[in-house]
Image 1 (cartoon, rainbow, N blue to C red):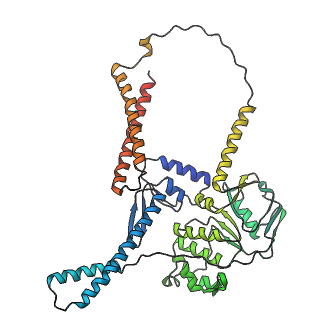
Image 2 (image 1 turned 90 degrees about the vertical axis):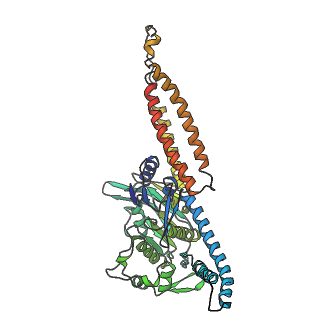
Image 3 (image 1 turned 60 degrees about the vertical axis):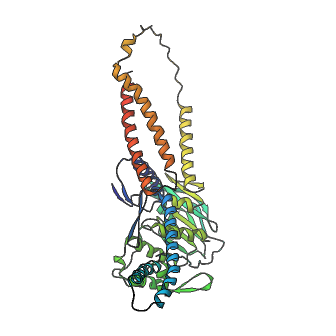
Length: 458
């Protein structure tokens, strides 16, 4: 299976179902995704494309982060050593006469290779978000008995809420339950059917919509930014030109005059995010912000949002992002009901489990009691041993042997799983253990099926 961003636009229940299915699938899966929970749970090998090179990591997302940091540290150490050695060799080269012997020529050639190592640069993209936030007054956004319906379809009923400074709220719920409608009512593109929404005078809303920005046909990257502002105010009274701001967001100078339609999906989303943040909002609404943004950009955005002193609303199917960002969650249950849950995405899932458990217990209590019917049993003649036992002698031996084999395979499986936790293992060792683990699981499945087949005949 080849999956390109499989979790985009799926709701949370569907994402969790897909994750469970792929985790137990025996298929080979090649997946491009920014969903870090997927990378953690489903993937056992990660390929990273960087600086025209493909790097392979035999493990999940946590393993990749650890080994990537080690690789970069080793490369930096190699470059530093080469630079120190190059200084010594450079002095020797300068002292030598032009006529050189064989040994000298070999040393000069080695110096050329050393120079190549010492002068290489570690390409490290650095994105920083340092925009100034507009002053936030005491009145922010207030919902007073708000209701919203479209004809017979009720989306929101009697919703009361007052936002406080610095709140970070997540919104979850199945598609079509009214999440986007609530956001549209805050920005004023939809009006409530009943009640009212009060927005404070100092509020500057930045709304990052999942459909992205509608750029003009033929418009260039630099033109889209200059339309908003030639200079962008930063924190501590500093300013930055539009061109400098683009470079901060990883748009090098040679991209500034490119047409926007020629950018990749991720670059367009990054440019759109720029246009939102450069307006210095103090009330940010992010509707599916993680779609098409790479993991590096996401981590920088997360750092910025942690320091953001305004209010934040996030609608996202990215569970990792929601767990890191939000402090409480609006759960759109359907039929107009919105439940405010204290905590992040994990707290929301725990709430759902508790509700399901409570519903099951209530069903048991409310189920009508049925008086047991006593049936007088007639004595049945005991079956002979020969009629009960339908296995041949050879099958009996096989049945006993299968039990021992299954126990042995499970023990080996557990042993390999413990070995794979060792972070000192090389890539080849991990690969061999993974192959053996796959063999054991296949053998265990076959033997268990045969054991069940024979056990039914006992």
